Length: 385
Image (cartoon, rainbow, N blue to C red; front, side):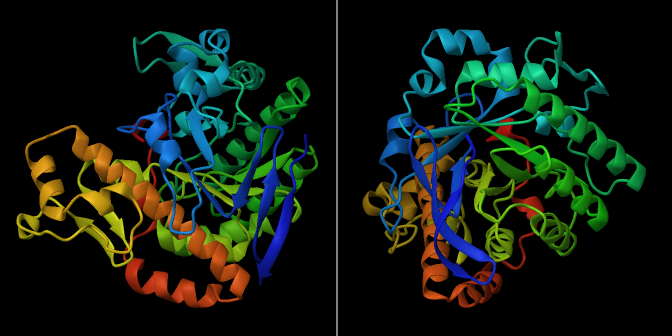
């Protein structure tokens, strides 16, 4: 089921629109909260469903991780329990990462057959093949699944990036052939190539030739600077179909997001909002705010007076600081509600700016506040989301 972006407005290469899947639609640009094991850390599914950005946009797509779910409780168990949506109690859309990030973070043995992982739970060994990743995701039943890829850490030698590219393309070819659940599940190819512009172009062209339902750009925000990331991203995007969704994987710092949107990216995921929330760090239009600081002990102000989230409507900075300082688990939940609402509002602001032809103004505003944050701010394994 090839996905397409029904474009509402453009501003240069940036666009805003709607993508239709067999289950429902989502608006772009879109931010997808990370629910690695079938749950957003510190947040109940009902609370996630109740989130609403300033423009009324809810969380529309949630990301879960194939590697973790196939180990516990197992893809077959999830299927027997009704598939990922019923398993989570989530009526929105879902996307499953193939486990390619674990190739980057866990250092498995790689060969033509796939990736040999040692379980982070019990040390047992598992082979995840391209076909196996597809089969597991078909059992999980996500609306969008990703091919198994090789994500090299940066900096890397050209030889290492070439090897990752070749293996990713070979695995993508096999994944494309093995995908059977084509009526209700989209399959995305992934572009690699590090920061080598010609390798990014080659990877994009060879991936597009396989005719996937959508396309992702992986292997960025894994150690390189933003100055190196953006040209590599632009090189890949130039050769991806403009009518299909384009997904920048694992990037969630505001400057990189708005710059990527300006280049034509539609989809993002990152653990940034939830990870920071668990440590009492909140996202605001004025930058990051560490609510654990002593200056907030007697503050009756909300985190952000303009934020529509339930945390800001009901609770003060002083209360949140108290909860964080005494280790109350609800502190992470309240901070997560705020951070995800802020992120949903932020992508809503990008959609509005594109529609008004004022994305350049928003880019300048975001850079003035967040210029000290690099792509590494949002990077990290989904298991920590």
